[in-house]
Every structure is written in structure tokens, then in C-alpha cells.
Image (tube, rainbow, N blue to C red; front, side):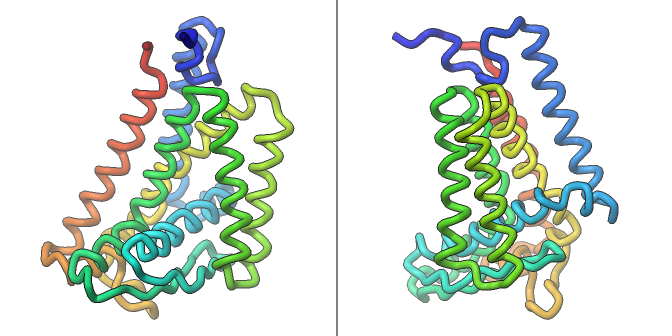
Length: 246
């Protein structure tokens, strides 16, 4: 039978309750600060690596959902300004729900991945493994899907940094890293808050929420608001579960 502490976030294992609360408070504070910073131009420079990672989560969400529905994930392009494009094809079999799911998988990809990282912090083995999987999948995606010069440089660098953390740092560093990355992924929804409530994606055509309106009829701002609320709920609930006493 596993000891109770094995199921607690190992960032705070063997720590008194006041330190556990301080760790949770710090993560919540970081989430709020990140969401605020991303609303200002200077925030993009401060949080640049997390912007690129959030874009990767977003575009991989589109591509992987297309694959899951029997389509084809052709390529992923990530650019130095933090934007990205996933190119994919879809089967008409799943219309109209299929294209709507692929559109939603972009904005919802980061918070879902972030929640998985936060929940993995409940066990040292799960947290360490999740960092290795994330770092390895960043490298794998570079080989298989990334087709922009910036992406071919930035994505493997991020993958290697995460792998170094997973393989060469103490447990508490890995615990902090997996939770912090999870929080950053969840709140990255608020980096694209204007995009969620936009009908157009510029030269790319319709935004993700406008695509959902096209296939599911309800207005794009409804889907934008729903995903913004869902991202916050996912973050709060994942932190709650991760820090909940067994």
C-alpha cells in the first residue's frame, strides 16, 4: 500500500501544511500575473518561451484532433511573432461536428494539457514521466510536422530544456516545473482572449470560434466565452485535485 504522501504534489512532499499553502498560493499568483502580463505588449517579451509553447499546444490540438477523427495532419508552422498555423484535412463523414471539434481543440488544447501536467504532480514518477513525454513529444513533432524555420529551431530547444529538467534536476525542481508549466498552459487561453472573441483570423480566414459558429450555429462570442470560462474551471479544479488531502 502506497504511503499517503506519494499522492500529494511532490513539490511539497514532507513539507508542513503552511509551506504547501504557500506553494499553491504562489502558483495561483503566478497564474494571475501571467494572465495580466499577456494583456500588455511587454508581457509577450517576458513570457516569450511560454508564448511559443502555448502556440505549439494550440496548433497541435488542431492537428491531433484532425488525426483522431480520421483526417490528416499535414504540417505545423510556428513563427517568431508567436503565431502558428496547423494544416490538416478532414473527412466529410464527421461533418458538421468534426470540423467544430477540430476548431475547438486549438483553444482548448493548452488548458487540457496544462491540467494533465498539474495532476501529474501528485506523484514523483508521474511528474517526471510527464516532463519526459512532453520534451520527447516536442522533439518528435519537430521531425514529423514542424515545417517552419523558426519552429525547427525553437521547438527542439524547448524540448531539450524540458528533458534536461526531467533528467538532471532534483525532485522539487521537477515538481515545480511540471506544475508551473501546467499553470502557464492553462492561462495561455487569456493570451488569446481577443482572438477568442474575434470573428476573423486575418489572412487565414475565420477564427476558431467563427468556425464553431459556422458548424454549430451559436454565435462566435458564445463559444469564446464558454472556452474562457472552461479554461479557468479546468485550472482551478486541477489545482484543487492536485493539492487535495487524501
